[in-house]
Amino acid sequence: MPKQKTITLPTLPRTVADNLEFVRSLYGADNVISFISSRMTYTGHDHLRKYVDDHGPADIITALLFGYTIERTPEELVADAYHTEQRIADAHPLGTYVRAFHCGKASGIRTAVELLERQIPGVNTVGTYIPKEEDE
Image (cartoon, rainbow, N blue to C red):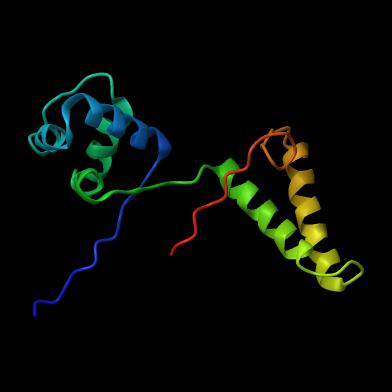
């Protein structure tokens, strides 16, 4: 039996993923692969074109054929860290060192965000926090 290869899905910036999905909806995956492979010019999709110019076509072709993940923004990474600390703290009884430690870390994250005068939903503003999808 032939040995199966594992394909690692590329991680694309959100702007590139949005451009890719828009182009795919207009032209279909096969045509987008043709455009990228032949280095044809396609207008109005600057993030996608710049990504291909900087990284080559392999990630985009793999994304079209097998899928991709979307890179977390810095704000999402901060929200992930904040909610991880909150979740760990909530898992421990009141008055324990572990709970106090993780509550303090979460509070420090929130304070840093406020000192930087940033607004991150689920950390220091009302909004929906979308947790990172865990690998299955």
